[in-house]
Length: 176
Ligand SMILES: CC(C)(COP(=O)(O)OP(=O)(O)OC[C@H]1O[C@@H](n2cnc3c(N)ncnc32)[C@H](O)[C@@H]1OP(=O)(O)O)[C@@H](O)C(=O)NCCC(=O)NCCS
Image (cartoon, rainbow, N blue to C red; front, side, top):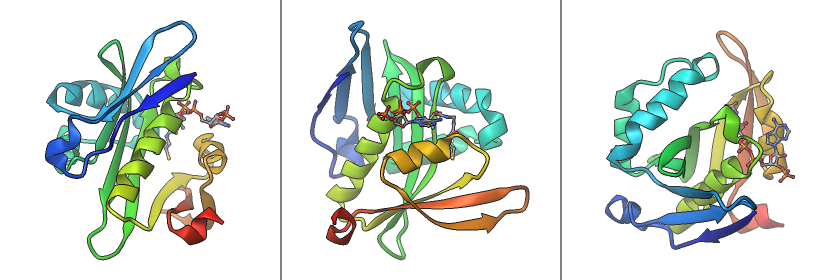
């Protein structure tokens, strides 16, 4: 699959202008972009369809991420088929990946990786040092993070399940 990336926003206001497009062999157009209001219902529907994994993500949580410019979506023919929610921590240079999801029918086509690529570009643009996330140990997604270069730095005993802590180092140290 060939991928075209355009520039990444330096502010939430500019966020909507950012877009990347990928074309798969069947020429179906997929787009990775920072979300706008038209994407909220699609993202919420996708989250609800995956409630067993994410629990209940409120519509308000999506609106908050939208306003902060921290919601990335993948669309196919305008329909939301993936989302990624993140947060730039203010106390340090860590960015937290809250959740990432690709619709079941669209998995294995590079959309998850493309959303992470956009997240990394967003983080580099504002000099973030690390991306950190927690993933229940039983989920197949752990192999996805490992494949994308994240390191498992810890395993925590959560209230309901064990959680792997994955980290991606964005500093020059992490490039060695
Ligand atoms: C995890 C998820 C976002 C991956 O998205 P995706 O679009 O299917 O992943 P991609 O196609 O971009 O895969 C990128 C790479 O990761 C690998 N990968 C993806 N899912 C994998 C899995 N379940 N097991 C092993 N490797 C996997 C792919 O093989 C690919 O490597 P390759 O380029 O060498 O083939 C998606 O499977 C999903 O939404 N899962 C359900 C929600 C979830 O568990 N979210 C994480 C909660 S912590």
